[in-house]
Image (cartoon, rainbow, N blue to C red; front, side, top):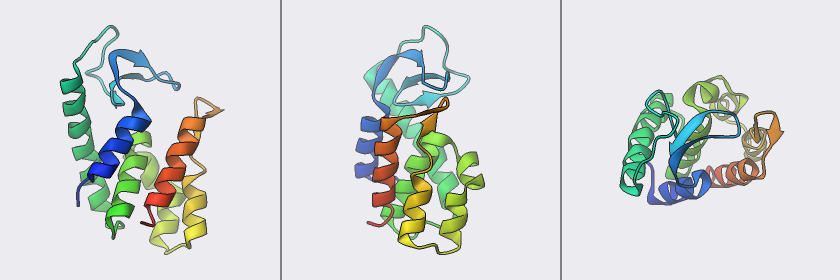
Length: 142
């Protein structure tokens, strides 16, 4: 499986497009559609085209990591987990109760509840993360 067009459009919406490097609410240097890493420097500027390329490259690594988990059985599950890991990192997903509940065959309400626990950044509850986790918890069951 790979990220659907639905997911890519939602990621663009959730992440927003910033062509100049900035610090996100957690203080992480970011550019484009949520791209982070040692290649992002203060003062960097990119084009929309390059932002798209960064998004697709970043998604490739996240998709591969989700495939290795062997838990996504549907496109909706795959998209939801890619979105979650793209936002928080595969390490956090690997250590999460969310993944444990999915592996144990948890109920719809248990899985949705686990997604919705991840709405804080920099110690603050963020409405944007609440919307994202709501979408992910719904997409998981589509």
